[in-house]
Image (cartoon, rainbow, N blue to C red):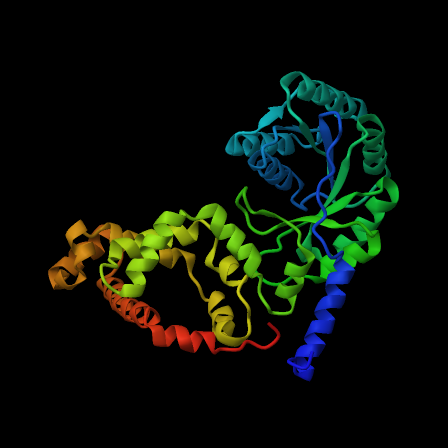
Length: 388
């Protein structure tokens, strides 16, 4: 404690209290002793229930499970079609069934048939995407209670849009009173540090937040770690999630090769730069990656820069490099005026953009070479970031 300044002590106390409020540890899914495990997805219309059902199925698939998806939203044909598209995209099993009249009896029949199909086909998890409404009404709750009695689910997950704030909190409270939720999934948690909804829903329902949606892609679902989200809220970043994302998406051997080239400054070509961009982009948008870095100390400027990142500009950079010959990528100094015009035409960009890329590439090579020197490593080791 003597090593902390008064300001740092305050940050530590606030951090510890927030972690305590949010539940300390990551709450894991409960699985049935006798498959299939049934997960009932609840929430209002537009909260991201269908997409989250697909993301959850994808997450379970990657964890060695065999999920089966079913939509029992017989009131909106588009909802069932959307789940079909999602299931095809992630190559997950889907039970479609026949839909007759749009009523509770049809909903119950579909759910029963889906459970039977899960048993027959050897699927160990059944994810039930339920109907939503623009607001909570008696019919919606009666139907959800009926599904709960019939399926006896191991998990009832409430899907909430974190951007709706207190509306999400009120909805979570209503659903919990009628259904006794087992957990919450917060969507649209990428971009900035939205923690208010997480804190309030946890306090109101007493149930853990189990997952957060951090992007539009089907792999953009993360288990909720209270300590990590608190670090994001307090501007300390989320280095652990960044490392996990990098380990799951990046080719380690290739990353080591690129790093070795970059830090020596020798042989780091424009082709290597393009490959490095591709590796980083596998992890998601630049905003989401930079959002996991601390907003204090050495990284403070990056957070402001994140809002100005144009993802389309990165596409243009790749197009420019792709328009070069392999010799030009390896020897940028041969790219004269006529070559620059040809590259600009081939990539659908301007000569000015080609010039900018080449200038930035040369600057980056110099910077990497500086970073590779022992003196830089010593300076980096001596840096201190407050609150870390």
